[in-house]
Amino acid sequence: MANKITSKIELNVELDDNRVPEKLHWTAQDGGITNEEAKAMMLAVWDAKTQETLRIDLWTKDMPVDEMKVFFHQTLVAMSDTFHRATQDDKMSATMKDFCDYFAEKLELKK
Image 1 (tube, rainbow, N blue to C red):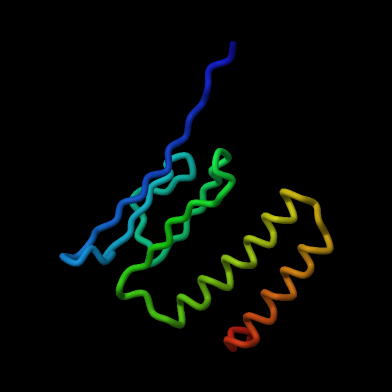
Image 2 (cartoon, helix red, strand yellow):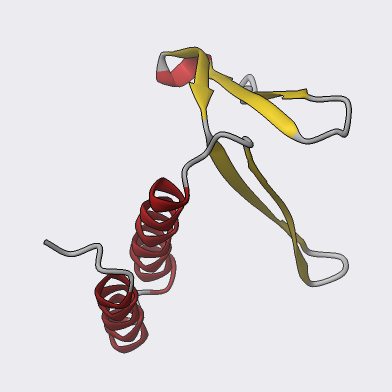
């Protein structure tokens, strides 16, 4: 039997007295990331028992709104790419990309 390989991703959240995130840091040593600062993060986990998505969405209090809009747009684009890789559903992937373009247009993100 082959040895199992594990990989660890670590998230550290520094909170203020009201438990609002002030700093986010993450480490993924297999990816060469060590204690890197981030301003926002989204984590989704599929719970097969309950058939639902569990989420953690965090952003620091100094995350600018204009950067949050770009973060959301890039996340939506990445989700459509991931959806296509996972399902090979060309039609829905194209529809998702169309929405990403619409989203960027309405937020005036496209230059």
